[in-house]
Image 1 (cartoon, rainbow, N blue to C red):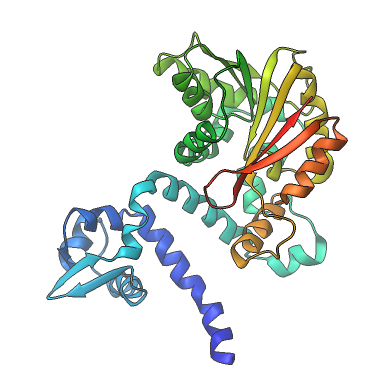
Image 2 (spheres, helix red, strand yellow; image 1 turned 90 degrees about the vertical axis):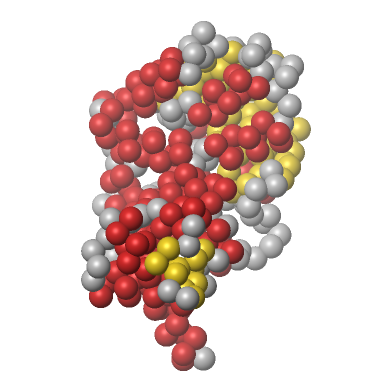
Length: 334
């Protein structure tokens, strides 16, 4: 038992080495062709030092890579990241912030204060109540990270729900408009509004214009926890990976306030990883939930989310599996 305990503690080094390998593009380099160790080190821009060799040895010992006949090759576990490499790199950057936020975990546990963690400082809107005054420089990095991880999820959302009969959709917390643009491309008749902070909308407008979709996709610069919202204009409002960033009181306010945007037959769609409340949390879910709490959020079960929506005045609330990890979609009607 003790060796297992020690092994769990030491596993942080493997995780950090894997994150570095993603950042340094070790996997796509080896996907092109096997390489001699010296060649891989040179092409990855690394120093030929004992540290680098120790780093590669960890990846080999963990069966991400293999070394045979003088060449390093990519094994199936390492190959598994290639189809969604951009998303994996974005996710890895979030994990790096998680690592930093755990630096003083005992003190955070004693105080319950998340406001000084690296995660809270990075997600600028979590560290202030004056969110409308946040500058574009404070949101550009995290907005790009979220956009980089949105491609696969956007396609999953489009395949999970039929938007073909709708005329207008508002994507709350839509970031740089990745999902909004995917909706517009799939449904050319659809008007899409990306609602986010003014600083985020600056970047979204530029990207939407570059994509040639400015006629179909517009932006609503707004703090949707405080500002006046459009009334009765939308067939659907979307929250993709938004509500789990917020505590219970804020999430409830968000759902109650944004409901006014829907017309008489409108629907709210909540899309994020949500476990089934009838099952015990698996280690991966528990680890992710701790990360969210370190920025003032929480991972909620499907049943919790449905209760939130019911309290906000919604009816006919159902959910469906998105077929991607723990992602589920909760559908609620006005």
